[in-house]
Image (tube, rainbow, N blue to C red):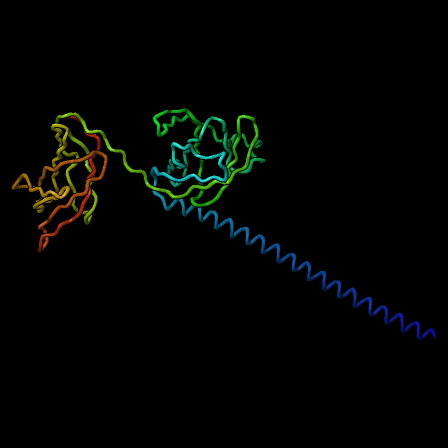
Length: 294
């Protein structure tokens, strides 16, 4: 009888040991799984963060320093760009950093914060302060509204922008900056009749040819004529707005008098060179800056 009890106790001990071993194995498996999941989560976060930084860098690198027009999209009809701005703002890129200036619909939004509304009260130093903008509507009426300079890390990417109203409460919004376009250069007003000089920029061709700058500019009866002096004597004609112009000299570098339709706006021209074995027409653009009076 004692022997039977002893055998039974041994059997129970063996079963208990096996059970504990199984639990240990299971616990080890769970711990291993949890550890793997944690490592995977950290890795995914790191990859996601790197991807975000890469996207921001790519956005900045894709745009040269300058001024652009861009759409400002929001998730609410209560928070948007003023209707006079057609849903767009002015995007400035400087040293690779992007900032979008937006004019809002009124003065009822007094501050913005890049981030979540719940975090804004503790980061007052980071609140975006308003500017006073004057907008002009299609009917000719004008109004003063608040505008803001919003830092933009990446284009075509949603980000959080909280707003503070006149009642002192913060609200969350999701916004994005999209469809960036280069701003057209503003034309310079045609000066009064007289003789002037103005800087001229030449683009196109192989890059070897140049023109003298500043160039002489004459205005008569409101029409402008520029004297273009090339860096070579081998140009035998120019074409401007479909009209052919011949050189005004027979010796020295090729010189032409051509009409200028507007200042500050690229003018497309064609110049024919005989420097090669056969004459060759080359397309250029000339841009004339604001003139200085002689």
